[in-house]
Length: 373
Image 1 (tube, rainbow, N blue to C red):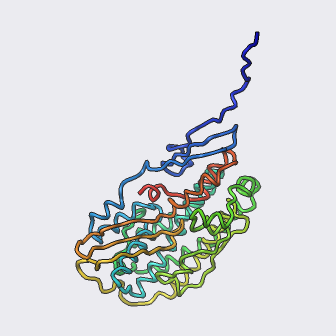
Image 2: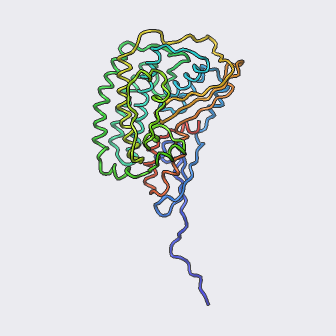
Image 3: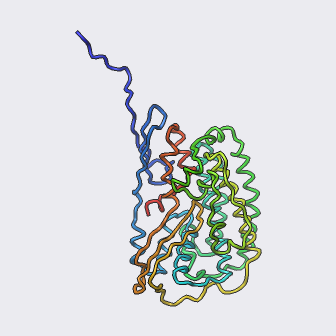
């Protein structure tokens, strides 16, 4: 007589949901993890919980109203969304933007890059266990929000650009306050580095975690700091200059080890390069008009165009098609960096521990507003 011998332990894979309410997913992102003990053997990334149909909405709004909707995608970098959209329409209509407006746009874009990176650094460090960095980074981010509030009256969704230039000129003394902020930021960056760069726990949690070689990063479609962290020197501000970047001197940092630590170092150096660009733009700020020659009723000729900028998270591109008859786009499509960079997550977390998943989500720096749109 044979007896049915059952194993003492269940050796099947364990499937768990991380999100969409988990605080470390940086929004309503759901990651379905398949685990062997504590190690990830497979994963599925589930999105769509924040979908609002922004692209379709834009096809039923006139060209000026759309600026307001672009704020709601990457809502922690609204100014760069505004710039990317306005420049796409300007390209479609062959509008010449005054030089002063191009300089101010450059200043706004780099202030926004620093503000976005501050939020990334604070939340990324807090996910891994470093609470103090969050408080430090948000201290400097508040200074930038004060500057934006003085310029356009808003602190999150700015509506700060117009097709052809700017809605209004800089307030008196605003440029001096920006230079004062640059002095503060350079000092505080030293504090960030003292807290993290050589911290033993930080090194253990980031070095060798989520390695993705350059060839694979390009194949997946990464852009921005994750791509540069893999050693690919691709930056639209250098390769296809817009605004006033062709008149600015700055370096494009790249990584060597292609891991989470390198992606951290790349963004840390981007802080310094952004401060460098802001100083040049403020000190060389030209006089003149802030809006080019734009018709009262904006109605681009029939045609289509694509234009991309370097947002804090990567390549932010807009595809717009016009039929030449309507005051709204015939087709409106966005190429958001967070959506494309998120494709790398299953590859990055494969074989790592559950605890490493939060570090890897943070190293990509996604905002679900532009993932789902």
